[in-house]
Length: 274
Image (cartoon, rainbow, N blue to C red):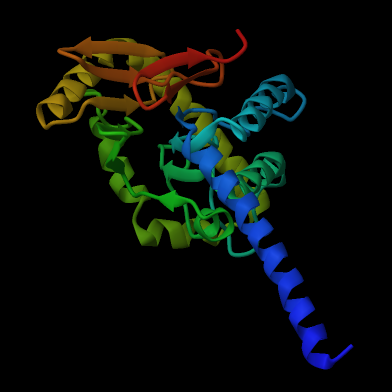
């Protein structure tokens, strides 16, 4: 067979395979485009020992695996981890299953967004580089399917949180980050877990008195044109509606296993396998 015919045959087969590749990948993107948007907060991974929180983490992982076929995008609205700090070469090994699942989301072109909470605000470049996540310093304002959303973890909103608001500014300074990095992970991570536990107790003490503060904050966001306001931090699921607008507090995955889902038409607070 002449060389020209051999080359033509190779090109024809390659073109056929390329068309098949485009068809497969375009259908994958199409399926994600028809998916829902999910909002999750206050999972606090790493709160307890591996034995103590096995059932809770297993349930969360089961939920994340289900999102592979349902989600177009996912918003983590703070405190996914009970503590997160990026050392130069080290991450806590107990988070590996969830990090693996985040890598799966990236493979399936599921859009991911991460808003810091009061337990995981020391985010570096790891999530952006490894998982293609969009990382935000504070809040997120945007439009999904024609609806205007405002997202914020919610720490510092309570009027009684004056001391925390001052501490937050100190802890987020670059100098604080550099000083903490001087601690070896075997010292730094247990110390941070102890502080995180104290922070959760403080949040629990003030959350009953601060619910109205959150509603007032959401109403201010409504006045600025937002259709939906979503927050966490309080660990108490809540839905408040006013003049066709809606505020949802996402609750937590410590006891409520709650989250929100937007299907392009309605935003709903839901509970997983309870």
